[in-house]
View 1 (cartoon, rainbow, N blue to C red):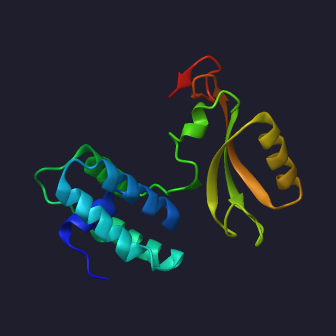
View 2: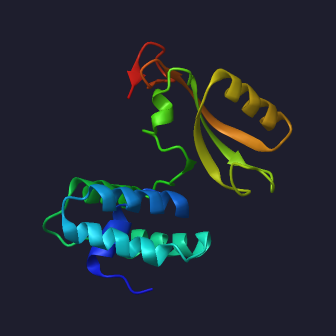
Length: 176
């Protein structure tokens, strides 16, 4: 697939780890970009990504994230964050982003990171790591799903009012 420089920069900055999330990010960029060149690049990129399968789309994205290097001058904050993410080698999780709106829902009390163990899970494919923000009832369901071997909860953090995540080491200290 042939991508121009602006399209490569845009893909480099995306955070989506699934085709639909990537296209949604590009849609938002095309709607709200003040620069007409960025808007056109986002629209062009969406046209190129829509016909691809999920796997092929993410293969292109992962290739850009691994191999693309930004020019030294004129980096945006989004590009600097993408570069730091690339250098850290941190795995991107499927599901909710760490700052997802679900986190700030007053009913949400739990953040879980889990691995999908079952072939027929609605959360993803076997081996996927997923982050979700859950209510008390949702968390109970996830505990039951773990007992039957469908998932394995790898991390659990309590979500306090206002979307604060409870620090595991100090009961009264919060992180945002």
